[in-house]
Image (tube, rainbow, N blue to C red; front, side, top):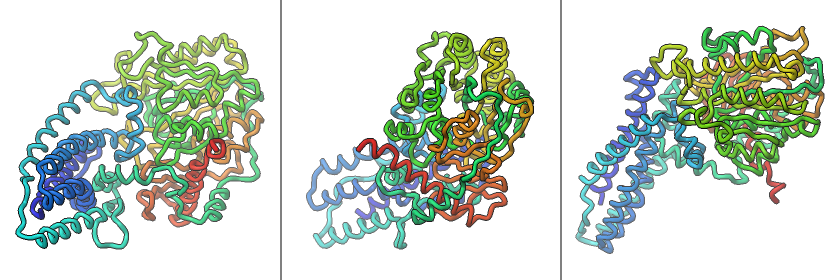
Length: 614
């Protein structure tokens, strides 16, 4: 039995070692520039978590084989083998999926990623047909190879000379597995911090066993009344959180009217790195960059989360993205949030939403309806010839449709448009603007295409009678690691544009820049203050033109917390006091503010909708 156990451990340790090398090679090819020492150190520091993950995998076969010692049965041996025949390909699928997932999201595979299985069409839209075919071949080939290697282990019954010998073998083997699961004799069971050894987040993440992390994340993210991010007593956390918001707002009023039409354009993945006035590349978005010259530009704004399902509750409900879950996927919780569109509707606005993709994705349709959107245009409202091969209608057709239909819309209106062409796999219906040598070039072409579409859109809109009374708000739904191949744990990958444009802006504010640090979820209060409408229900949002506001931004980095002020930024791994990135901030006080913010936020997420449901 002990020999079998050792062979099983060696098998799984080799298995995890192989996929760790694959993972680092994948990130290296994608631009991470991993040194040989990084490969070696990540593999070394991974051993304890790999041992723990292996112990979980071995526990059930060990139990079956232990029973087989005392009650011999071929069925038990076959069951132990069959368990591995299922586990090996499943593990391969998850570990292969982890590679592009980390490249796109900057996080190891987790419970949130698994929720996208409920949207298989949209999930597969992010990968090309070629990538999918290669992945399927890789799963089959690797499964065959590792199953053949596993079959080298002799699973036949081991005979012992006495019951005492069998019991001692059982106790020794069981103790080894128990120690493996908890990671050793230490007081606190093993956790991800064990693998942390480098100032480079990628190497730390590579040393974390992805399957161990997935299981731990699922276990910890089960909804309960207990807040896993409660580091401070409730009174202290609430006091620190409240201290971040001014009690005496004094916003600058930008508009020459209290009831303009509002066209709200959410730009898929438009990071600040492609907007020249924000320090971005010169030729990526020439039209949008030129628009900033006659617009109000907020220069230091950060996306609340990494994905669109986090952006909508942020920009409409003023609710920051929280760890583990997207609140938009919980209908009752999302409906309990304050709603900027609903307030506008109560004050005479007519609401519409335009999107070229599926509104069933991430419960988007239910969320939009609960926010009062009367007219929702989506993928099925466009002919198939307007679609790309993955997501739906290209941006030019969605923009054309909205602009034309606004001519017949009763004013005042609040019309939202969400673009999609700049989402992976970055397909555009025109000739490339730039030569394509890598993924960054594909991204540049996609955003340049959308920028061209916006140029045509505004040229048309300026000729319509509703233009002169319309405020245009352009903001990204989230940032992106491209085109600069930023580490997603770098808060600068969340830096996004926020632009107010239109004839309704007072002349003295056209071309003005607001440099104060803020976040995507500050948008609702900013808009409602400009319209002189009630905004006090949005207790996570602060007006961006308010000279009395305290400048800061919180961003959710899945496994980490991001915190930015005018003085600098830092990120922390959850449940750890060790900063990974820091710029000019006093770690102790800023971490306490950030931790308090996250703690109160998650408590509100847990409580949202509970009274209503009861």
